[in-house]
Amino acid sequence: MAGFLARRLLNYAVLVVVAASLAYLVAATALDPRSNYADRTPKPPPAVVDAQLTVLNLNDKTPLLQRYAVWAGGVLRGDFGKTVAGAPVNDDIKRRMGVTFRLVILGLVCGSLLGVLVGALAAVRQYGWFDRLSTGLSFLVLAVPVVVLANMLILAGAWANQHVFGRQVLLVSGEYSAGVEGLGSQVVDRLQHLVLPTISLSVGLIAVFSRYQRNMMLDVLGADFVRTARAKGLSRRRALTRHALRTAMIPVVTYFAFTFGALLTGATFTEKIFGWHGLGEQLINSIFSNDVNTVAAISLLAAVSVLCAALAADLLHAALDPRVRA
Amino acid sequence: MTLSEEELAEELADGTLTRPPSRARMVAGRFFRSTQGLIGFAVLALMFLLAFVGPLFSPWTYTDKDFTAFMQPPSARHWFGTLQTGSDVFAVTLRGMQKSLVVGLLAALVSTALAAVVGAFAGYFLGWTDRVLSWVTDLLLVLPAFLILAILSPLFGSGQWPLFVVMLALFLWMVTSKIVRGMAISVKEREFVQAARYMGVPPVRIIFRHVIPNLSSLLIVDATLNVSSAILTETSLSYFGFGIQPPDVSFGTLIADGSLTAVYAPWTFWFVAGLLVVTVLAVNLVGDALRDAFDPSSGKA
Image (cartoon, rainbow over all chains, first blue to last red; front, side, top):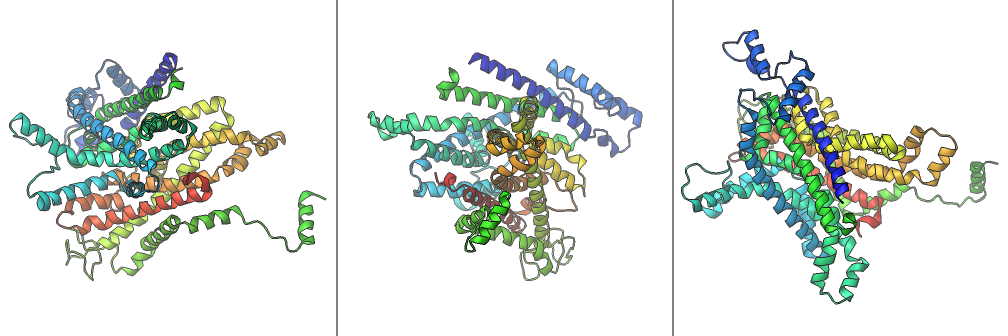
């Protein structure tokens, strides 16, 4: 088991290095920081622009590999370089990381737990009303992209505030309101901001996981070991949760690693549309402002977190399946 | 007498011999007997008809601006209402739908072809070919596709949408290629592939003549489902301005514009969003029904 994990870890480390380097090279080739200076008035002299870009390690007249070497050297020391405005990337990223982390973790927990639960319940009563309803709904949800879903939620939230609650209950912009006093009302305020983004992020996950869990569960329900568990006197509920659900979750856990990248993308859309100042929003903004270093730093973090998810999936897999541990 | 001549002779001797129904006909029969498949196919056909024939019936084109009607609700003059600029929503929506459908279809075809080739080569040759190809697949899975496509977006300016299609396809093929690889490994051991090998057929030809055609049912289903994911990815990218560039329009750019005005002018958002959801839903229904039609035992397990 330890050897298996060590090999995986090494493989992942190499993948992160290659992925991050690729992201930097692509960003440095495709984005053009020089154009940021083009429409300033008065137009700065070319020599000044060159000097400024060189200080930021963004000058396209320096060979690409040389810029890459400077960037990589900085990253190894834990320094992601400077933004186009000259501020250190690290400070900005550190501030925004918490925001994205909260959103992603909450969406992930809600999405995967509810998805597995819905899928398992649907499989236990196959072709019952719950199974049909959840199948129909997940088909519908899978056809709605996050960008549309988030906007629909905002519209629905505004409508509900106006017609159902009669006051601002579901807040659709930002992470918290400024000027709220007292711990209790601050918590409530944050929760009010959190509801819609979390729904927008987790609904898609619930749909995917429930479909997958349902199919796996159906395969397992007819298996001999579930019948044996019943025959040795376990109640139906215990046989289902202890034996069937656990076995059926193994492939779903493997699938989890694949969905994590999609989840990060979904978080990017959700942040941007709901106005949360997280990494995803910054990624989109920094592409428009040709901020190569920020883009590269966020790509690196994305690659690291995808591989952490893959590693977590490996560990979960080992926890659920004794054969892997042996 | 060769085998085929013998068959011919048999057929001539027995005039009443009926040919067994071809596989394609059987699958098509099963597909159209399922309500799911029928509804999905009908809706999808309708959408295509609407996108490509619909504009002929509208007095407006997507570049026309009606300077007497800004932000007007649907009326007899403008069936879906107008935008802030005076554009006819019906005309721009259909134009966006054309673009999204074409981009989605092409990207799905390219990505499935790529998945088939990469997966089949990895599974057939194994060894170093497999290791390198699998590693590239893993690498592309690690990089979130949206991120790379967004970074590359300055490269595909207006009019460069074929390049956009290729890039989109480059990030859709990985999971399928993993499945194809697994299946190619098992097909490789089948008798007809062994026979071809011993007859000295070159490996590349075996892959294209024997391995990939035997995975066709998987590939057809996959290509169908890829159409929907390509349309969804295209929409998201264009929404943020990373995909189809103005003056051209697609579902994504229209939804982005519409969402800003949706509160007081619902027609700018809901028609586009609705058509997008219905289209993707129909594609998914077709894909699911096709899967059941190719393999009736799988879906109803």
